[in-house]
Image 1 (cartoon, rainbow, N blue to C red):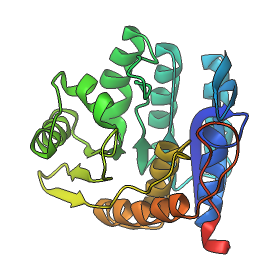
Image 2: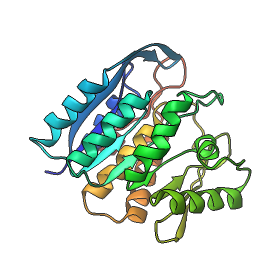
Image 3: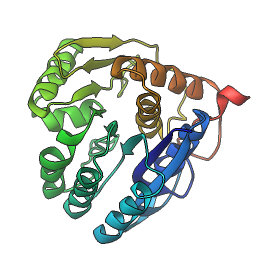
Image 4: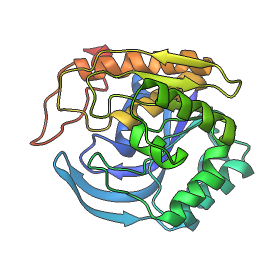
Length: 261
């Protein structure tokens, strides 16, 4: 059985973060492993507390995972400090990790920055260049490229520019306040691929970014090419949103097990 490790924060409500990643990996019939970077107190209404894991313990978790059940792919989610980012980058280098998918969570839906400037610098300089694929949404891509993205042409230019400058495959995710879910992938070789989907009419979107990046990692673990892994992940996410799960008083979670319904 193939294994995928999620390096991310824990979501106590189960909709995003480590918990969403475990469900996504299990839904793909792969073995889920975890490296927890933070504990959060949160639900569908928001986050009320964060307890960051010491960077040294993040490194210890990475060593424990890779030294025994070596993962075939890695998903990295929100990391809040430069120290933790450096610990992750060092651990991935130490174990020669492959098929690394980084979801660079930096900007909230409200537009507020979620991590400090030192962490952004460490993310751009030390973690993103080690990735196989990065999956920024439009606000995050704007931070990474330093320009405003207002239409499909600007999104494609940003994806190509980031792919060239970082040396990685870049998926710029649309659907951020839009009426569609059109994403553009720029590959290391300079190719571009558009993945077009209509937006699912639901307010229950908690954990969509986590779910998509984990599903991409699952595809890569199974030997899919990057474009094929993205296409398969988009289909899985569309199904999870379309299933119509409605839990909680705010933006609820997806139905990760929709294929088993």
